[in-house]
Image (cartoon, rainbow, N blue to C red; front, side, top):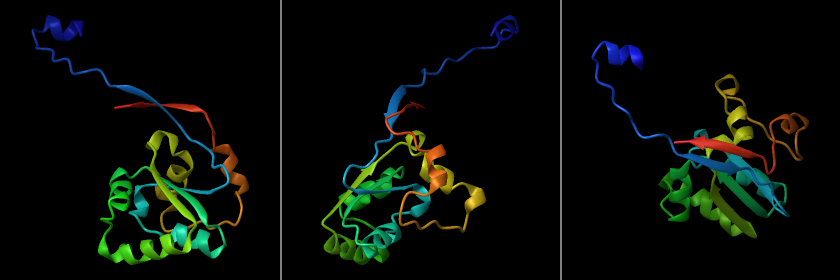
Length: 142
């Protein structure tokens, strides 16, 4: 900044980023599905869970628009029928938003190197433990 001042260049200070804490919560008596924005509201993971007999489902996504669309029943028409069928077949579906910073597993699985790959598991895969961090605090700067 001293160099800028010495050259007589104007300095513009922007607002400092807001720092927020966020955590990933493990499911309790539920199947938890964490997705990222790449899922674009697609209910495929929920359909897989239901086909395994899991009827108490918590879907957590870092795509705020998809969460809002689902909660306001304004999902794209191509997906609306599938979502309604999922709701009918389940005992409970909860959908919530999570910041990307705490959505580590979904973010890692959806990384570009995994593009086109899908993961379907009937239990927690062994490789997930290195990314999962229940109750750990993460920081978000926005």
